[in-house]
Length: 136
Image 1 (cartoon, rainbow, N blue to C red):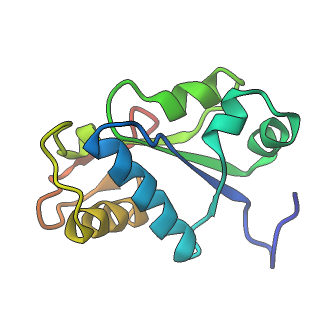
Image 2 (image 1 turned 180 degrees about the vertical axis):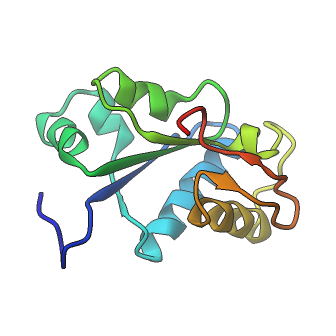
């Protein structure tokens, strides 16, 4: 896995759980990928232990997990490999599991908060809080 133009290798993982916040996590990661923030990769393949995906996770400069809720499946999957990710948990960012509409507005708010860094300021409904899932 090489670096392009001197930039760090940044891998993005979404826990695409069954709840609304899981869907939002998935859509946020896809949006971040489209914007060139990092490369999206397959959390299920990492969890299944596929060697190429595990090697990519261990070799990345930065692994970023976006989990919908405090169960933190994506974060824990990487930690089980001995990899410490930068972790975001949407329920720690003010979203409520089972009560958050999956809208472009919410997806954009969360995406913008993540682009600002692990500790974010308020953006139209996403309250000021640390969204790193305990990594900062």
